[in-house]
Image (cartoon, rainbow over all chains, first blue to last red; front, side):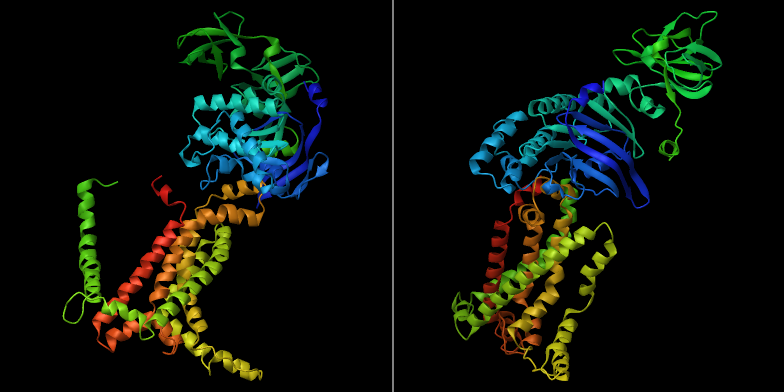
Length: 362
Length: 274
């Protein structure tokens, strides 16, 4: 999948960036290339450093170490007002003493654009966010979703090369959030502006992005397409954070054979040392339940939750509580066997390097 | 928050207080102001403002109060801005800075300024020490303005600081993000958003500055009379309540004018209910 991005032009490059606040290390060893016009998402739990990374790109924080390159030029020490980058703030941060038009025209006015140009641009920006004709409205009287759109319009009107939306949808209700996701992707495709999106919502990240950067404890855990990070997580953190997962300790006996709870199972992974301890990930939707079998891997249903489209079924087997997702329900206490196809057993190396260890444990 | 009955009960003590000690005295002042010694309606005493150099005193009062207010505003803005920036670091320093000057009796601190500015005061003694020419500082309008600024500055800083602290830091980052430098951010965002604080600060400095008689008596040496001093004399030396009240009413007109003007310039006043 990475191949298709190599055609794209590099726009931003973070080079070995590190940042601490006092004794707290918030970012370390960050190396990341962002390509022109892509929709890239920084995904991670709160405190993972994603917002700090965004603020470093926006110019609101200086890294302690490393450089930020834009189009090959070092912009590490350039203040925000001199970067061709605009942020969409978490709480919109609209100017409450100005109406919609004055808010949107703030940037172009500072840039000294002509009145005609500004009027056309404001119109275009409002059209882009589906709020035509809202020029004279009072921003404080708009709904959350409308305020968010104005914040986007206010940023887009400056024709930035890069837009940095910082969890812009977190304050909106579910329905509006879904609509705004589509809007943002549409704006990205329509304008060609590079989006560096920050969220802690994995569903948001997977459904919107060209690429996802999974972060934890100040480190980048994995960079890849949404399919990539979902189907082939590189470590237990990514597997656990993105979607639901069963993560179990295992031992890679040899190529294509993994030992879980004392039994050997076929899998598709190769290249691990013999008898190497690994993390084994199995997605709940990849486990099939069937009638118990003499030689099979059997367990007892302990809990069933109906979600509308599917059931979450907990099955206890070998002292481990497995999460299974199925479209057919089961009853609590029922004996079942669990089956997984070899290609659905995902083998991940355990964190080994000292840094990764710290990242996982701290 | 409260139901209507409870609200009325809680309001009653204040209403009684305000009626007895604010509203009724106000009626008396206006009554005395617009009547002559026989108790008949007359604007003669009000008209006195145009005679006896009273007009000069009123003009000087308005001018000095205006100058002091402007100086307070110019001093308070940068001070409050710096304090809001530092807010995250230390709140005790801020409250000390605001409240400490208020601990000192204003009469005492004004008398201290007197001893500093006098012809044989501390500053002139130091000048003499270096054989420099001495300066006439006491009994000048400048000395009165100094006293006003010294006494009333906290009343400007406090409302200004509160309104600046209310501005979300992200709003300033948004302005910067959209290309504004610090100066543009101040003019286009900080200033308009802090205007309500500036408005109450202006009112809280201008009114006491306009009506003061202590500062002008001590630092003006009885030679520079403000309208406050004249009103004081009418009551304490002349025992002429009618003239004193008439002048007070005229002063009140200026205060009301000031308040109307300042609120007219407050762009956020409609948003209070939001």
